[in-house]
Length: 333
Figure 1 (cartoon, helix red, strand yellow):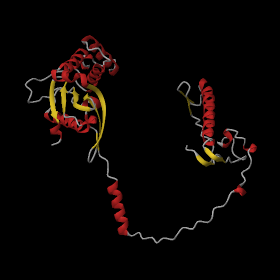
Figure 2 (figure 1 turned 120 degrees about the vertical axis):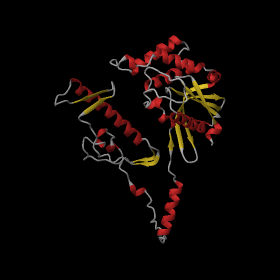
Figure 3 (figure 1 turned 180 degrees about the vertical axis):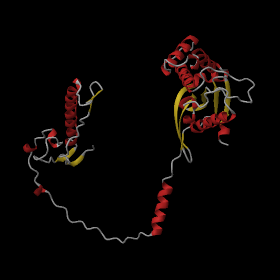
Figure 4 (figure 1 turned 90 degrees about the vertical axis):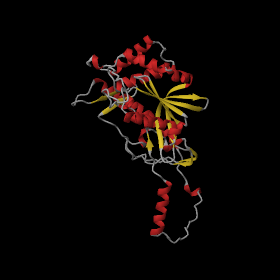
């Protein structure tokens, strides 16, 4: 509420809202309610606690309302108001305040507006509508991260044969859960939260896996903590990635405005030198991705390059240790 020269609280006869069925006690963040006509023992105490908190909150609101006036505060006196109304929730002692004397006010002279011919026509209306439409272009969002199978549910649960690969990879438990754990391990390695040690990485992978897995699941379907830890450490040790390692910042949100669209996403890692983004890195846990999937990965990276103005980007396939570079000039073609 802003300050003003004159403040008049209105609608103070409005009755207060009181939820009867459910009571949220804020002090211990618990919820209480009637069940089958039976009141639990704590319901009365919860109602009393919340009634007190509501009363205190109403007093604070009245305080704010009454202290916003710079010159004059006018308090309506409504004795016939309901006891459950805002007016009755706090005694503002209106009877102790002098009644407002309006005879001392100077009435304003009558203001007559000048008559004006309505020149609106169908053609003018169409032209104005066209102007409004052109001034309010529709916003097109591109969210490359939403298409990342590592984050939103992997559609490549099974191994896919790629004709260009002479060797097919077989990874136990390949899928979205493995991808999430791999991303998390690499993030913690880059931030220094996780020691760059195989045993520590295996232990962390096992901990994350237990958090994401129900106890009744078949162990054969679970990703292997040793394989995930090894894949993460191997990726960061790749010569081209190791060269960028001192500059890599993980999990950076990206927003950018382009000519006809807005871009929002989260880069797995950016190589930042000073105030400039040199490279964008995209970790992929896919096993034997098809050519179509690889092209989708490249397009996603092009969006990151365009948004960050980075000169190049690398798609790092964690399962195989392969790196595919995408250059800035390719993003502008």
